[in-house]
Amino acid sequence: MNHLQKQIVIILLFGLLLAGCGPAVPAASVAATAVPVTETSAPTTVPTVNWLGMQYSADSWHAEPVADNFLVHGMLTHLTLPDCQAILLASDPIYIVDKLPYLIRDLPEDWSTNTQTDDESTDHLMIHLVTVKDEANEELLSYYDVSDKTGFFGYDLYRLGYFLMGRSPDPEPCQAAFWEVLITLEVSD
Image (cartoon, rainbow, N blue to C red):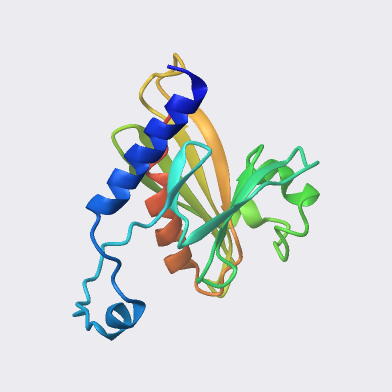
């Protein structure tokens, strides 16, 4: 078959396909046709994001990288709770409080004697919430001291990090919100 014969066969096949579709429907009849509308709510999924081995909802939190700071490794900011942040520190705040005055301020000189520690545990984590309060029982500082207890790193307890909580005017909802993120921490990540 030469090239001209192939083109004729293709044109004939195309013509047969068009003829088989039937007559064209006038545009006016399409526009006038009523289509019943039903509202159905499709389930929406909340995007989940990974941050340093933890899972958080993108609707509630926003991760912020921290550049050029060897004391702060990252920051997670809550989108609706005022001043609610979890800041991953390179060291225990006791040892770096003087180097982070923009994060930790208004602490008395003997602040480490006014601490309270609440211990919690999951299947794979040992978590200490350390809280420093002033004489009027107002919270000045709180942070999570988190350790792996699975033995993944070859030790019974291996410190994973210190998460300094931001200076929220109402710290308990902030701590509770971050707790839900913290307990998702996968040690291997």
